[in-house]
Image 1 (cartoon, helix red, strand yellow):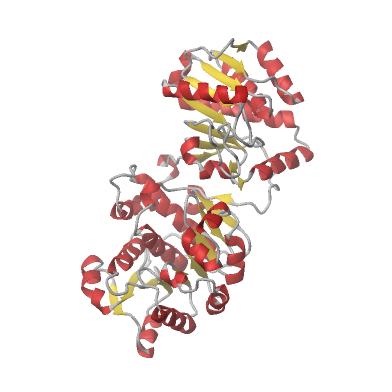
Image 2: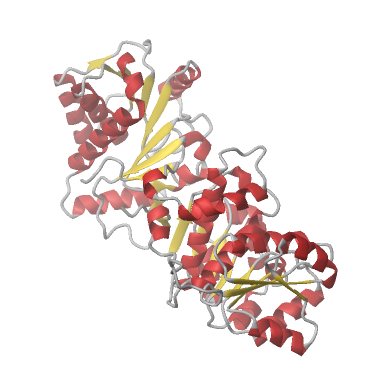
Length: 509
């Protein structure tokens, strides 16, 4: 199942298009509710003996809740429904009638000792802060959770905006079961969603089109080239990392370690001469070269490279701009630009586009760097993070890896990929340098093709994030721990892989 990441309006459009193509709305509701019940059984089997409380609203989300209640009851679970508002749509009214006929009971008041509470109050179309009885119901759910109940939200936690993740007074869930698509709000407010499961309910494969794809392990494994038994240093490619201005050896060291842990064949670190001893000691597998100052040194760099990464610890000075210009004019091969190699082009995308030409290229800005590049603000970039890189990628002819939670990769052809892997352990200095090394390695090893750069960037971001997840903790985890987890992140198999975001758990439609 390919999971698309959508806004609230895009989610509604996808369902509407599916209905127009012949799948009744009632059937989509049936699939959503029945498959949600299957997930609840699988996740909370030991808690179900104490029963399940389903809290429903008036919309189709409430209808999903009635079907979930009915299916759980048919499976032998004691279920009661607290109805905050009577259903309004024909499908929801029918779902309620069928559940009551099948033996599901309506609770009087909010009492009960159920250890699983299903939130089916508000769906993707809701906006604004909950009020009145809805706010009271959400407060009751919160109290139950504080008392030890597990909360399951259908489609998204009630009160959470599916597009912007605004959600003062929203439900906080332990598990969110999303139907057909991943909503932007899920990824922007992970702390309110808990574990997220995306279920296939049979939305049309043709819609929505052009929307971001959520990257998962299968997607990455299908695209990262294997290292064959007869591989040698040359076939695993030669990477040169240019950075490390005076006193900034650490950035190139971390980038180099990320590259070596990702399978690069030969590594060259080009940095200020004063950093030579530190780099030799920290990355003995790397060849050291001082920063190019002459045409001969530049030629030596180019001759030694299949891919060049520029920026980690380089420093933002007029000399930096001259150096980067010289390298990009002399070297026409694949390149990754990060940190100060981007900052020197603040507000000057035209010059950067001219220097990059048609080569496979990736830029890896964090939101503040992206804001400087396009003459915007960090807040504006964060608000528009799912869209802001589209025009930049097209203008540069390069993939844009916009770092953050989540990370978005923009391709020059307009495609977008979303990487939700990762934890706050990556929110520390040096993490981006490690990602640069991983990204450059993959860019060098990926086969030629129109999507080479964007594919390399998306795979690199996923594995980088997965390595952080494998560290299990945030406080106490260092960049070195993440680097140490990279071999497992590269080589784990789906049979042992349990990601925090899962797709198609309920089986075939």
